[in-house]
Amino acid sequence: MDRFRVEVISQTPNPQQVIYAALHQDYTENFVFDDRDSWPSDAECGEIIVKRLLAGDRGHYGPLEHPQIIFNCGYFPHSVMQQARTHRVGVSFDVQCLAADTTITFVDCEGSAGKKNLSKTIGELYDLWTNGEKAIRSRSIQGRNGEPPGEYRRDCKQRIRKMRLRVLNEQTGLFEVGHIKDVMCSGIQPVYKVTLEDGKTLECTTNHRLFTANGWQTMKDAVGLTTASDGNVVSIAKNSYVMCNGLSVTDRLYTEKSWLEAQITKGLTIKEIAGLSDQSLAYDFDNLVTLCKECHEYIHQNNLELEFAKAYSPILEPQNWQVKPKPKGRKLRSHPVKVNSVEYVGEQMTYDLEVDGEWHNFVANGLVVHNSLRYTGNQFLDAAIGKKDIEDIFYLRPVDYYTDREGKKYYYSPEQRQKDLEWCLEAAKRYKIDFDGGMSEEHARGKLPFDYRQHFVVSFNLRSFLHFADLRNKKNAQLEIQKLCEMMWPHFENWAPDIAKWYTTTRLGKARLAP
Image: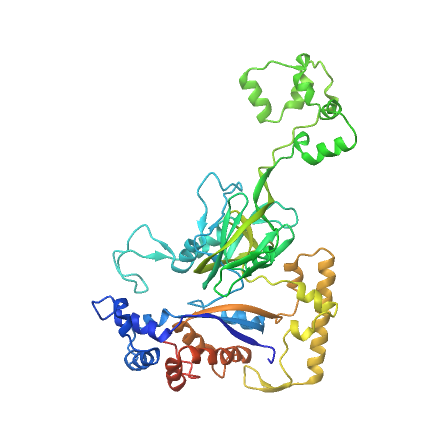
């Protein structure tokens, strides 16, 4: 646990004063902003909040949800992040995020996005995922679970999971269909606008991964971004090309660029190339046959060209004819577009998706971007060849006495821990063998020990942080997530000292649900 790290990325200034303003606004007809100069200090506001809001335990805790704090957590085992993700309200785990108005591409059963307006913004998706879709009818009586009459929203997660998401097959370069597994709010973060040469734009955080001509890279690394302390862009050091929503792919031999280039390389003339493809026969007057419209359509629609040629008394022998292939549908291939500029647009609420299936990417504003909660495999490769300490990659508990779920004590010995470390190293070597053999990262990583170390970003509003501490900062919680809470707590004390003091006295370790 000595490798664990927790740092603060961002926090709302004067959080207790913000809560006071929200609380005061609910009980006054005045516009509280106009009285800002007369507000109590942050410390005085903390005392008022404890006395009038928290100590009475009378509810009305909405004002606690306005201040937000964002932590960067590092080197924790994967199981800690998985546990913490179960606390959905106000808690989000991600290393990459998109602005709310980012358009996500969905397709119909034919793979087309153009015939119907199927696209939705990621902000709309999060609202639907979290709050449900608005029901067409209103409820005339009380619902079976006590819901009040009137308009209501119904859960639509299953419908969203079934929607066809456009994803990129990273091996073939062709677009396929995937499905959403989760939609997450990642809190307020600094956002940058990336503009491409063809006019496409994407608003994202600096660490959101884009699929470039050189593979997956964070936006910051892809363009060589340097920023000032206030977030503004200082310079872009690299020319970068981002893979974008696709070009149509055709299967006809004579329109395939690579085939034509190959024939030219062989030294063939245009007439010789035309002879190979037999396209000139279409302009040979003696080879033309007149058909009525109905017959012409019937022959082509039923792929009867060869049968017709044999039955008809042909001028030329149809011995080299091939059966007309059935159309394979419209395919789209990704193509690179140069990044033109990057500009800082300020702090915004951000979101991300988790994609189910083999390919963990999706199309956002026409650009191919990575989904959330994807972990790079380079660290396992480095461990396999000795470039990184295996302890930096996988987490094992220290040698000590522990208690199982039934309260029985056991000893985790140095010998057993050493064997487990060797097992982790062998798993990393096996990962390298699989990866070098062409196996996808997702497939190879699925066979690794579960608790590899992971960095993540987590955002809380003040109320959800107290809820998280109630459930995880207690003696019967997993040791590692207790440690996470312990390392977050000093930052919280410095941020909201009066509320932290009240919580320590009245709730810490008692497993009560937060206000």
